[in-house]
Image 1 (cartoon, helix red, strand yellow):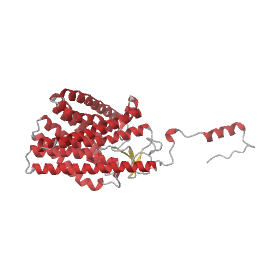
Image 2 (cartoon, rainbow, N blue to C red; image 1 turned 30 degrees about the vertical axis):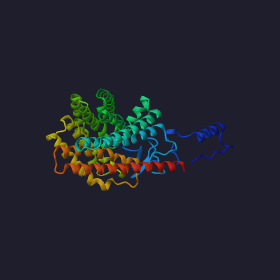
Image 3 (cartoon, rainbow, N blue to C red; image 1 turned 60 degrees about the vertical axis):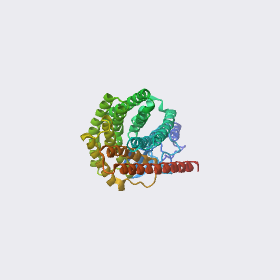
Image 4 (cartoon, one colour; image 1 turned 180 degrees about the vertical axis):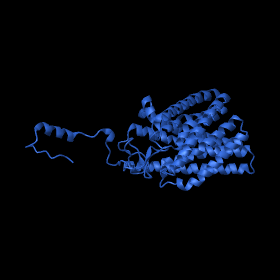
Length: 402
């Protein structure tokens, strides 16, 4: 409450001091825009790890403007157009790379169908072309908004909710290098080497940040498995495709070690949390499917597609994880569509890719019909997801210009 200043009794020096205090603005870090609301005491704020740069307060999606002031999007679908800074824009661009990653994963499933089922090669090529186009556009936008500065990259890496999503960049690059190797093995190897080194640097930097308390204020979620587990497994599978068995063995060992370490901690944390994960963040639980799928693909690629005891073990792990996710489906439903739905895409595509190879490699009865049924169902799901994404983007643009 402002003080009442009586000019007759208040000395001039005190009047000037009070006037300066009234004119003084709060510091930028604590200023909250009219459309924002700071969380109340006891209110839980959970960082949305995948998709758009969002926070969740009491189960409602709230895009984040600063680290201290969760903002609310009028459309309920992403960061607000008013007052959004470069860091928020970069986070959104990197989060949208899940579209490129999921499309590349579907391209890999069609590539497996090309070898095992005689599917047309052009479908896989077209999917990888779309993935590469989305990847290039989003990466250019990220660089234009400050991503070329190492300090900004470190800030983005250290973000407790979305730092790990920078691993999307080299993962998509490694998948593309493996797919394009038939056009030039040497060029594909050089491209793979660059992306594999980038993935290793990102994973090592993130791990060093995490073990020194970088995650002290953030709840654990399966997204943290992507850079330190899934990326090494994908690197191993690509190295086998490029005929680099030593590199494949080394990266597979890295993925296996940190899957045991981080997988145990994250799963234990989810169980100990007692279902406290907010509803908008629960689709990230499907990321648990990625390690057994990519690990199985890496193992079978290193053994010329044969399914030995270890390969069958990966198949058992994947099938059991899919069963767990199936029981979670009622809890994964969302109130409305948003870009975070793409969190489902790569787990589904990677799981379908491994299952197609497993059905063929173990000669399951009716494997050909089952493989085509699985591939068709996954492709139709992606078609619906593409359509919903385009509709959602048009709706956001309409609201922004209204």
